[in-house]
Image (cartoon, rainbow, N blue to C red; front, side, top):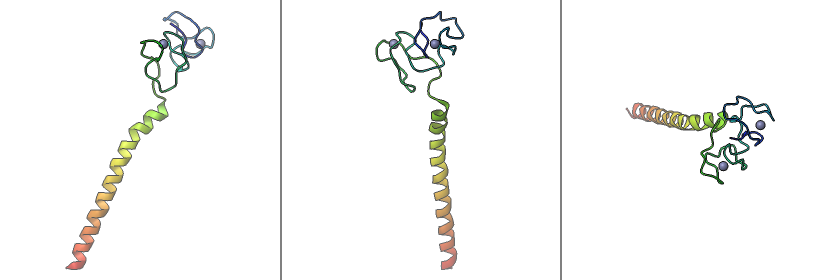
Length: 95
Ligand SMILES: [Zn+2]
Ligand SMILES: [Zn+2]
């Protein structure tokens, strides 16, 4: 396999690359199977059938993708609560 940080060849049992010193699968610069350049959020290599292994999406992206639906749900409940409050206020004022 190849280092995903610098693309140099190494044994798959290696915990750190000889060339760049990082964990060979801890980067997203190259495909570990054919060393073609890859993007950070790429899941599959475009030059060979290999699935790209390693960190996957950066932590920030994962947090955002987790928080966005939660935030949407929160906003919906806020809106729902305010509407209920407005309805209650309206009902009280008509009495
Ligand atoms: Zn390397
Ligand atoms: Zn590849």
